[in-house]
Length: 159
Image 1 (cartoon, rainbow, N blue to C red):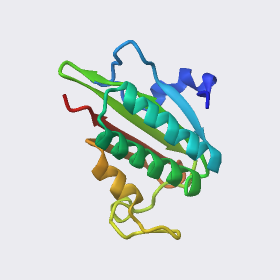
Image 2 (image 1 turned 180 degrees about the vertical axis):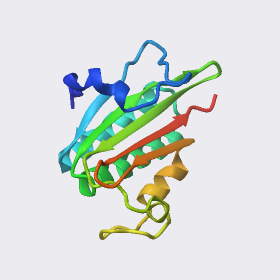
Image 3 (image 1 turned 180 degrees about the horizontal axis):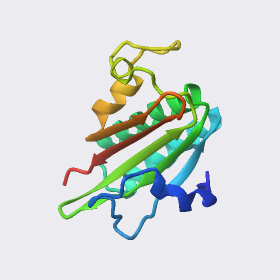
């Protein structure tokens, strides 16, 4: 699936450009829609390819793809759809992969409860948000009732 070109200009609003937000110059951010079941599959494939480009081993590839899948599904089911942005942050000693998942939903009323294992508002097992947090090295959630949710999750390649 091809990223949504017109969203590239608005990527800056999704993340706080800190010192590790600089990319290595070979890969800019890519934005993918999360609006349908087909988009969820396309996101998984795009994230898998991104983990390979970022130099992750098979175990970390699986971790990141699993986290992306959970976050994208939450945005689709609970958030009324949204976008997933893939970024390639670098630090002096390592490269990483950052996922920014943004939805248009009602927000999360009680974030602490939503991060608790076993909590679900649907038919799932309740491992989505908390599980995704455990799979990534850095995990931030920006949410408020009535304005949607943005999750920023980063995994660093171990080298």
